[in-house]
Image (cartoon, rainbow, N blue to C red; front, side, top):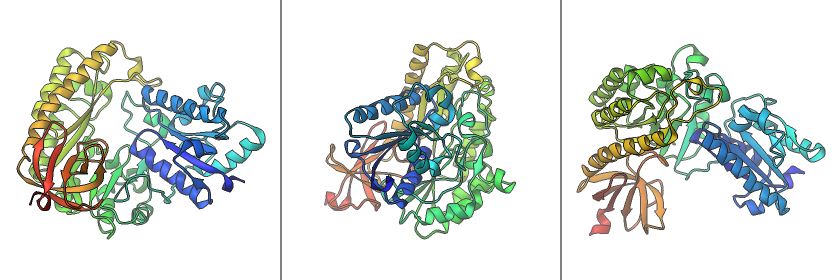
Length: 443
């Protein structure tokens, strides 16, 4: 019966959740189910949710209710809610969220057909925790064909005091190296393979009894279908000499690294249960730049953590000025239930948190603008991501930009193929993006 149904899948949240959705799509495809990205044509809608922050939970509920409107119109028969939201909050969700028919957790995707069949015969069902949480390699890519994410592990055991991930995703679990290599090889010709996890740098410690991140990168680098590898979510306290030397010497690894620092002031870092200090962070950045000339370093920071003072925020601004990171994301602290930070006194007022985020972005805007302006009049290798129809030109990225989270390069060319790397002469820069043209266009 289900093979005759048309499925629509909505994936919310991060790139790691996107990989889970792509594996779910593969399950549907293998069963012979039809897929559509037009909800008005779907009979069964699956919403893969995020619940990392309160705002993500609100987005998930709003999306489910939007799908329920199609259900009221008789277009959608069943709504399936999967992922982080039911995994953590099924006790609070199941009774009131009557719009949804099936609930699955993060490891229950293999049970989707069984759960759906039961819902057709018996009504609403809760299948959270009934799956095996086993590794699955099959994917249906939802990114452009020339780049893909590879999730090398799930869960986390860092236990930062503000974070719900260990309560949602559980302990850190590395996936077998041979399975990851096979998965990467199955993704087709890739201009860029983006390695992700809650913490990529701890890969292998649980599974092999030792850190195997560098051996994994070497194995992925040997794949002929992978041209370049980008590293995200590298925790500062695990970035050692071996990894730095691998980034420096491995031609396939882009000279780019994403390091979530979260703050700079030692008192706040200790309250966050972060392992580093301001001094160790600056020393790490210095070592990376000395050993990997030109490396682009990205990070994320939280503003308004409990008891953060104006002096702490000023210290973070000064850190940014000294660190001179290429790209940064700033987030207002979100008081999440069932976390240690939520129970801390001296919670910062929401308006103060928002103001500090704006101030931090302004500091970083100036730093990024200075970095980007250094490329004006120079040739830059740019990976073409496609066409921006609003700007009426091609759009791509340089080595210092990851998709979706960093800036872009807008350029004119007589011809450009998605996934192709071109030499672009930069003519203009702003605080976030670059603009230019290829030589053939200029001549």
